[in-house]
Length: 211
Image (cartoon, rainbow, N blue to C red; front, top):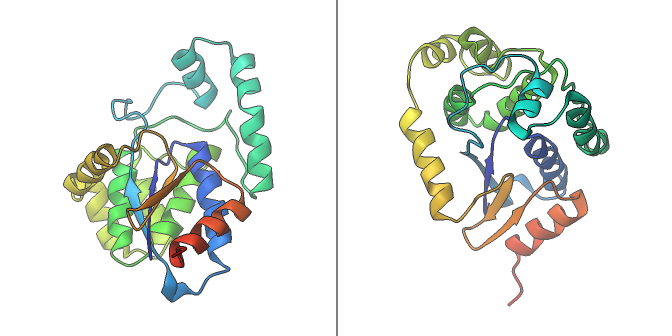
């Protein structure tokens, strides 16, 4: 059974949801489920690196105050705690995630895209690295196990740009407008940061559908 995960590094619910999916997946034999990460950008037109922190970005995007933006994120922070995820919106920086998605395509060649996505999520939502900086992208890819030379080569070029755009078009063809979305064998789908129990049930049903 194949699961395609459509997500964006800039999506806090993708961070939570993919962590919960990974936990649910632990209950199933590795050879029964193939996981494929797919590129999706919530804001393809975002600047390479927005001014200010992530709260500043939210105030501009929604026309609200920093206090309102902080309050809006309280639920996200609480959800994150339940999934073992920490958010630091005041140190996080909003960036265009296209280059991060290109690097994930490189990692996928070695089956390391899941590990790298987790590093990218953590870096994006804590500000521990700048995902608009190609040196940081290459460094994190190396930490995930990607060959450092290839990581630097991809970071400095445009390799995998076509693949990223094609997957974003695929999302549109499949009617995906929100992430995370987990597509099971192109027959059923589950959207959002769902509880581990629900994720487990969906995986089990996809592996052994009712006759």
